Amino acid sequence: MQVISDNHVVLGSLPSGSCSLPLSFTLRVDRNAPAGVYELPMTVTYKYMTDNAAYYSAYGQFMAYNNYVEEVVTVNLIVVVKDMFDLVVSDIWSDNMVPGSEGVIIMKIKNIGSLDVDESVAYLQSSTIGPPQDISNLGYGPLSSPATVDQSMLIPIQNSQFLGRMMAGEEKIVKFKVGISPDAGDGLYPLSVVVSYVDPWGVQMSSNVRTFGVPVEPEMIFSVDAAPIEIKCGKNCVADLTLFNNGTLPAKDAIVRMNALDPFTVGYDTAYLGDIGPGENASTKFSIKVKDDAVPNTYYVTLEVKYYDSNDDPHVTSIIRKPVVVEPPPTLLETLLENWPLIAGLAIAVILALAYFARKLRKNNKANEGK
Figure 1 (spheres, helix red, strand yellow):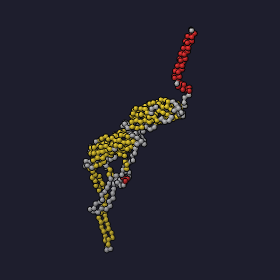
Figure 2: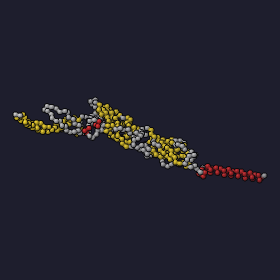
Figure 3: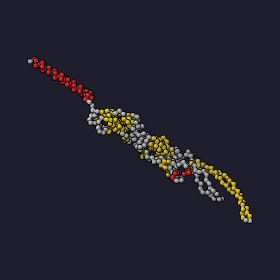
Figure 4: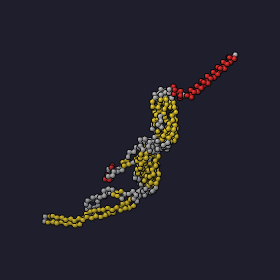
């Protein structure tokens, strides 16, 4: 037990048989102190008069004498520490705590007090700032009142849960759903929990506020292999893409969509990737065609990955850019080399046709000579 207010008070003079005004002291009781009756010693220092005398003459009093003795006594004050309910928060789990999503916070709440309570309800709320360390402000004006922290990055969606009766020492698991702002960076964000309850005398009370940190994971980021897609003007190609999950959480039923603007057209702009765990990758193909009049240059197509989190909530990643290098139209030689199987086939067909007609011509000539 500790006195945290000023530990002395000056009372002045008290006439015999009178009573002083009530004295006020602020005490702090250790959180783990058991309920019971305690004696708090208080030292009282005072002076009282033991003797006095006055001397007079024909002209009146000319001298007075008062003798005071100082006394120090110790008075034991009776302090009653009541049974109480209070909580401790432990074993905090969280899931899907990524920016722009809805996460889940699971925690254990234990009644560390000595009082059994009924109708207890746990509330999740923004954290609060307590009174300043200058204890002279305690109880005097707004400085002594807790201030609520404006917490816009984590917003409780399900902010209460009924616990019912909680016995002294009993522990229960609670679950809350929170929304995470898209602007939240990775790190620990404060939230607080408090439990309201009805004590054995039917009075509505609340526990102390417990503040804890909630981890927010980095934003889910996908990337694509850096190798550019190369294509010539007026041609089409099948582009092989590999997408990487650079986040810390799995992406379920992921789908990638390609957005290609002029001068490109895409045969089919969506491809299924499946489940991609953290650090894993998935490959897919897209058919791309470029216009004949496209200007040779480096262009970009954009990709978006849509996926589902562990709560089956949908998400879409930020834009991913993939370079496309458009090269000049193929030369005649390149066209011939590119289509050499067809040209070779045509050449063989022409040779066979010429051989056929030459043979037929020889037969006709021999037949005419025999006549």
